[in-house]
Each structure stands twice: as C-alpha cells, then as structure tokens.
Image 1 (cartoon, helix red, strand yellow):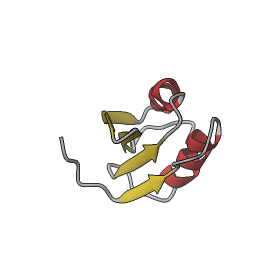
Image 2 (spheres, one colour; image 1 turned 60 degrees about the horizontal axis):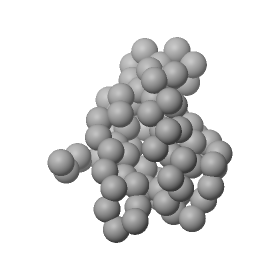
Image 3 (cartoon, helix red, strand yellow; image 1 turned 90 degrees about the vertical axis):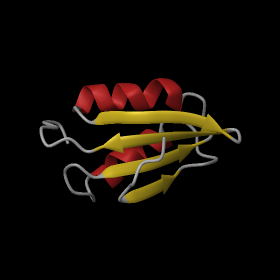
Length: 83
C-alpha cells in the first residue's frame, strides 16, 4: 500500500532507542492527521514503533519490510495526550 506522507524520517543504520527518539521529535513538526514515513534497519523497531504509537495515541497505518529495511507509516493523532 502506498501512503501519501508529509515527511520522511530515515533512521537507517541507527539502533534502539534512536529511531523512536527521532520519531518523537519529528512527529511534533507535522500537523494532526499528517503521515510520517519512517525508514529503519533496526529489527527492534518492529516492537518499538507499534508500542510508541499505542502509548501516544498515534495510528500505525501500515508497516512493510522490503530491501532489508522496515517502513512504517504513522499518522499523527489529534488526541495524543503525551505528545
């Protein structure tokens, strides 16, 4: 599935917790409802990104694995109380 996204955050080569920390900062820069494409190579993001979204109320619209990279599409929530 192809998502139109407002921003791309490439965390390739970075290890936990850096991808989540960078996503936390980046999500502040986009508008409510915007989608961020996160690209990662760290397998721990398969656990960390869904937990991040659930904890803060953002929507994980899709996740894909291709070319040894993980792609996440996160939509910023309007009710993310801890953001």
